[in-house]
Image (cartoon, rainbow, N blue to C red; front, side, top):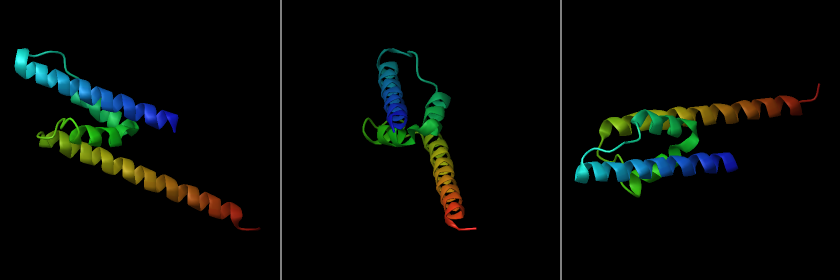
Amino acid sequence: MTIVASVNGFTYLMNVIDKCCACACERDGCVLRVPECVLHLLSFAGGAPATALAMLIPCHKSAKTSYQDCFCVVACVLALVLVAGVAAIEIIYAEQCIPG
């Protein structure tokens, strides 16, 4: 659970940093940004809830539909992996409980 919280905290932080850089880029000219592929990798590594929160709270990437589309794919894949994992655990547990 600590790992999940750490991944989500780091993912949210990276999204907020990128949002601050984006605002500075508009104001002062381009500065270093966090690449979108890094943000997607962090989401796929378990930080999808933090990415979703970052889209709502600081409104990060809220107007960029290509980013949102990719995030939705990542979130759906993670949901499928989670469901498949839970189903596999239930099957293994059920087989262990059957006598014989």
